[in-house]
Image (cartoon, rainbow, N blue to C red; front, side):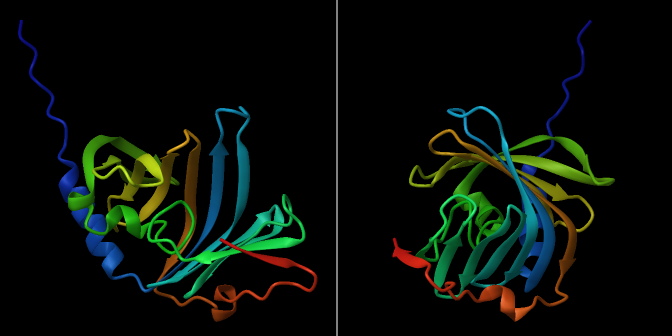
Length: 204
């Protein structure tokens, strides 16, 4: 008896849907959970907070756990302020085009995806009661800060609601978005950062 071949769905229409949706987004806010698993350490590090994005180059993550940590892209610089682990300093750098923090956290995976990635359809999944198509991405170029990514694309609205990134050093980073608000504005104060008194600015 010959069993029928099960054809794997084509990931390209899913990526097209996500790409088209992303082009319509000017602002986005969401609650986030971030899980970082470092194979050298073992136990995962889980953080939570609020994510804000205003395209093209403003982005912020305000952490509630650990409270007080912030990542801010103000349109010119990316500020990494983590008093929970490195008190007394803030790292300032140019805004990166790709990577695991910054304005292109989502965009780097859905802007021109066919040119930038080899894609495969992984499975269909459910997130907070919504159906999502799960797509695996491998960069075609080897100069990326990560070697693979998996994204969850909402089947109904095309919004990316979960991202799993395997960084070049083997560390795995998962970002899960919930309570998303698209094109409803974002408070401008979230995209500004002034170093607190006594905090040293370290340029990178």
